[in-house]
Amino acid sequence: MSLNPDAFEPVRLEFHAGKLFTGQDIRGRDKTYDDLQETYQIAILVKERFFPDEDFFHGFEYYDPRRRISLGGRSRIVTIELSKVERVIEKPVSAMNGAEQWAVFFRYLTDRTKRQKINELVEQEEGIAMASRELLRISKDEVERARLMSEYKYAVDTQSKIVQAKREGRKEIVDMLKSGRSPEEIIRDFNST
Image (cartoon, rainbow, N blue to C red; front, side):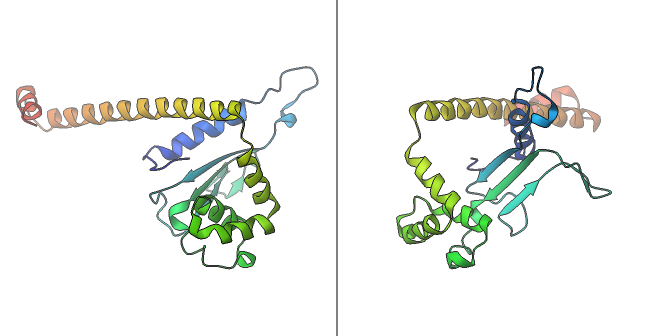
């Protein structure tokens, strides 16, 4: 889950989707690539809009964009932008498609004013009912695994931000030098800010 996705969110999604997919073990005499299971990196983007359109649901897979041919692989990246779900909550549950039902569930699960709508979703959609039950049964081990994964993501995100800032700073200095400014002028400008 990303509260406020950074500019590197697309690459971050690819990285974690790759880790999920390649984390499967297919070593052994009776294993082949056909034994790899489908994997879905599902990103719930919470507060800010990330994609410029009005759609809250996006599904990505590998394909040749020029010829519009899908690779037909087994890894997918799914994003759900909860900031775009407001208009969906007003629909009757029976009029919502599956993606809308899940988005409403994630967005309003803890909102007491929407409890009736969530209860309707749980009654009508078996997968949401199962997810609701599972949320109540999350074990300490699963919580710890999620905490460790969150720490890992935080560390990689922080490292990415630091490296990106350094690259931008270097580029800014190189651009100033190329424009004819002396190193002394650049140092003086940086020291005055």
